[in-house]
Image (cartoon, rainbow, N blue to C red; front, side, top):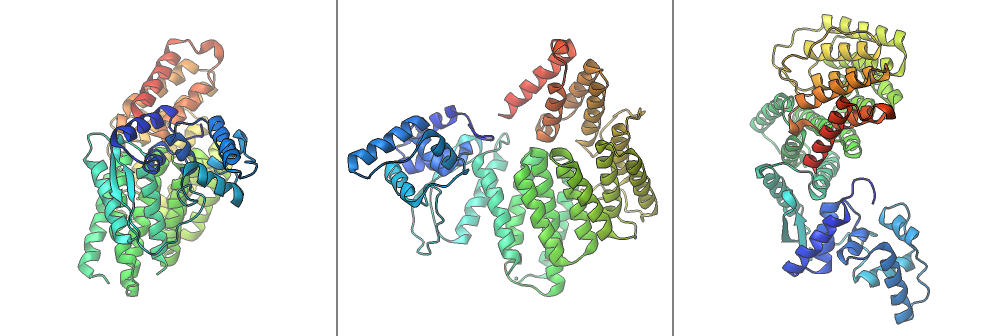
Amino acid sequence: MARGEHSPACARRWREQAESRQWTPWQTAQAIHGCCGVSLLKAHRLARGWSAREAVRELEELCERQGLGEARASIDLLNAWENHRARPRPQTIELLARLYRANAVRLGLAGDYAEDGADGAKVVVVAGGEARTLHETAGRGDDDTERRALFHHALLGSRFAMSGRLMAEVERARQDLDRTLAVSSVTEEQLDRLDEQVVRYRREYITSAPLPMLYRLTLELSDVRTLVAARQPAMFQRRLLNATVMLALLSADALMKLGDTRQAHAWYGTARSASDDMGDLRLRALVRAQEAMLPYYYGDLTEAVRLAREARMLAGNAPSSPAALGAAAEARALARMGEHKAARVALAEAEQIFARMPPEGHDHLAFRFSERRLQFYRIGTLIELGEEVDWAPGPSGPYTIDPVLILLDQAAHRVRDGQEEEGCRLAEKALLQVPPEHRTSIVVDRARALLSVIRPGLRKAPAVRRLADLLADTSRAGS
């Protein structure tokens, strides 16, 4: 089972539902593909309840029965085709199409470029595992209506859940936006309302759970794409691009918190394209500084430093949020890399830039580098430098996740210093402090990493076991 896929039990439940609703194998395959995170080719096999070995045997028997020659397939090859590690030859695609009674498009092995608008039954998986049968249409307007219905349904549900279908629509929203950026009529009143909406999202994002916020942002981006679809006067176009950048950045950050690094990286790319098209150096710097968070938490610290320095270069000498954030992000990444002297220099520069920044009011907005944000980066850097920080979390104020990440940094250093039980107690405190809807991958994965380096002789200690149990409960609640 590949990373991110649901267990075989999930596909079995869809087969049972398909039997009771009298779905076709194609409808069943779509439901499994949409929910279980598997390729279309694998979904066809799971829709029939076959193991990889059984599918290969069925293919060989089909070739022998119909005199089609040698199948030239194996379990390893089938797994590679199903997980996009290899592509079958054209002759083999023909055999697979015969086996599953489908065509190359429905097997996910070819693109569909038809323009005839042919209808067909389609199963759509929505939140909570519910499925609806719709009709496929070729019109973009119908696609957008269906997408909006899916996200409205998800937002109206009693609990928010990630599903393959919904996350695929988040991806499609970004792709549609990328396409329309290249090709816009709108009134000033519409732009004023859009600007107000973007500010409201930036304000609410600080305390909102990432998953419902992502769904709301996707709905908003559908409206923005409609406005960007035709070229506008330069002044209007700049305002639309600014809104696009902010909404794309919020979407990327939400996906980063949810642990979907592939989509987060793609959304940062969309924000980068829109900001580059706009040509505003500070906005371009902001995108790079925010994007540096992704490799810092999930990837290559060297890439985080590169993006932070690129942000500082674009921001220039004038004091601004992007310049201060770039310096602070660079300091924190350098400290974690062990470059202590360079980290202290970058942190001092961040503090100097912030001291020269004009006051921006007391309104807490995402991407505004406030004194609270400076404190977060300062404490994080000092912890990585191995200094004892006299800091108590206290009330989190408008920021839900920052105090938790600081506690987890402290916990990791306790464990590295040989204070495993104290580190686990701090990590447990961090997880309990954050509301359940905010216990996403950015928090849970760091706690798991801490737990994984506990010495074997201490894994039965009370504090270690409590943290392990809490993580297990969190995983069950999430699934």
